[in-house]
Image 1 (tube, rainbow, N blue to C red):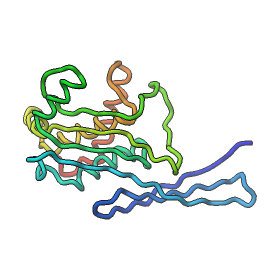
Image 2: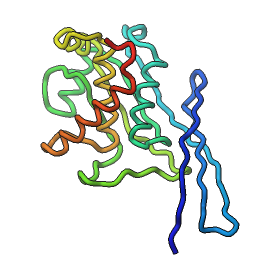
Image 3: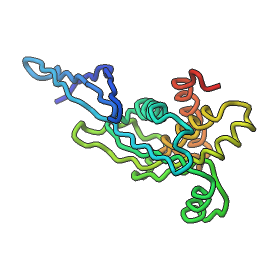
Image 4: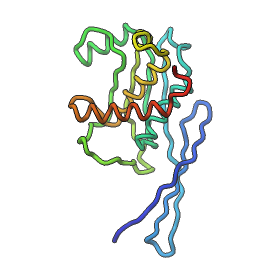
Length: 198
């Protein structure tokens, strides 16, 4: 028996301090008479700022960038965390987890193992919210790199956040083909959030 179903485009709404709620409609044409099920998916994005960085970036904007990146990757029922920190904390984490004694721009701590390069897109069942992991960004390093690249620190943070989110959902750049695929997704998602980033 074949099952034919269709998922509509989601309608979204967000209230301050809450995750993004999305309504999906799934139609089952193989059942007589056909039925339609409606269910909600909720995206939870938790944001923390280390002391001294509370006013560097807008929390709602960070949530929006992460949300668009997750939605672009069909991770509409997911939970993740974002930490904005400084060079000292980033250097400590880089040393502890990567054995590199220097600051870096972004670290991702994924809760899921990456899949094969040609793995198909997968949408988690509605009842299974996935905790994807954490993305940690050094704001001072983002400022440095923004100056080197000739654009705003906000745009650099968006680039780093998208990069980090893609790591959480299984992308990597450890092989040429993986790197090519990841870079293509980064560019595509950045276009979705590029307004006012120059």
